[in-house]
Length: 570
Image 1 (cartoon, rainbow, N blue to C red):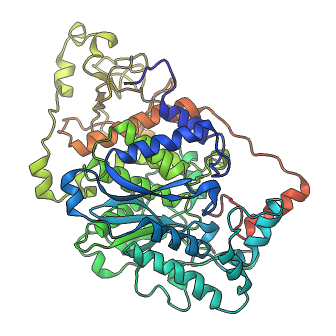
Image 2: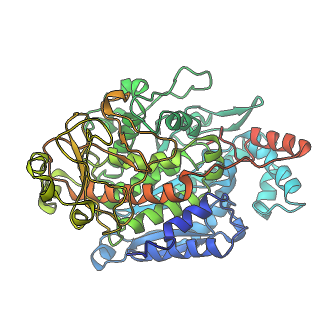
Image 3: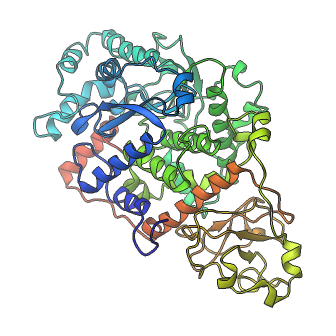
């Protein structure tokens, strides 16, 4: 347990993350510590090789040392799944295919599950990017292209104007990489078929490739709102229930498309997807991804959006945490460790633009970890029902609300005397939500006691209580929220927000039910995240960086053709 008086590893990570976007060629001592910590955490459970990306030579916003997990390091799993991939061959394929995708964000394996690779990338590059990237990089790097100065790239550029021969060559390498990694499913989160800026198709996607080069793969179009939509999430006090994307906007032209054979056992009416709110949509997409990787074959999965650094890490992170909560990946890691790994690797080292997103209020990063409360049930588990019943024993629900209210005040104890076991707060206590027969216990003044978190499921009943075993980090209120009762919420499942810096705590059912190990683990991760996020980022405002007139025009053009990050290209 870390000393509560000093900055934790996660807080140090968030401090660096909220300072600047990661660039592989600009690395200091803090970033090196983050990189080494990730390698250490991967090494706990996996034998891995490294895809070298020194100074961002492959991709400027990918890790300098990309982890390729070969097999789990336990003896049993080592012999169950054998890697058929050689890292030298993989490195060569990556180098050849990097121009095929937007911003050079090639197909990259990031999770190993039952011998299958779950990969991430950006979408396919379009003419706008292929024509403009080399010239743009030359101007803005002082005459040297740090990401594309490569003999083969020069040859590729020389044939860029020869019709489809450029796409045949570059996308051919991309397809070879996908096949080498045994990828079968390609899940496209774009709400557009192509990204258009200034009349140019700056990006494309597999689903609209005219030559049907990707016809041998199973393509799934699962459109999901971009990071701009999460400004609405923040403006609604971080309440995702009832928040529905406007599918009638002009640029939205990619319908949901999933082969029927992949949806039969999910009991989801996919025809209703445009009516789902943000919670239901995210839940259903995650269930689909888990269903795909749980197939009987050895096929892997690729998930991507446009640039691959907003929506893509959202689902990669949720997948990693969900599989971890089931004990299927990163089995030896504690909640604080898996949280550090997914924040550092899936978000920071793969280039999420947290500084820009915070300055615009587009808090997709916060949404990811606050969303964990919505996937604690077994319907999101990757383990079969029989296996869950055999391996998981429910936990003692402990003191019920009725038992607690029956106690005399002196028997309930003070905040300090109760802290060794539980902390309790009633929704309708006089100090927070009105009158009640139960006295409220002050959560805010609780000390740091334990790593474990014990919270109960939520309900909208006016006579309920929330109680937890104290955690390593206190829960805190996300920025901009205020106290509200469930009756004033826009949804029956909205969070209850407490004053004086407390966190969004779910309100449990009147009669507490036993929690599964999965729920306990995910809620622990969420609790640690909320504490660190509020401490480092919650009260911070990030002003946009100024730029000169000429530089601003060049920057605007660069963003328009997909050569520079912008909130509209996610």
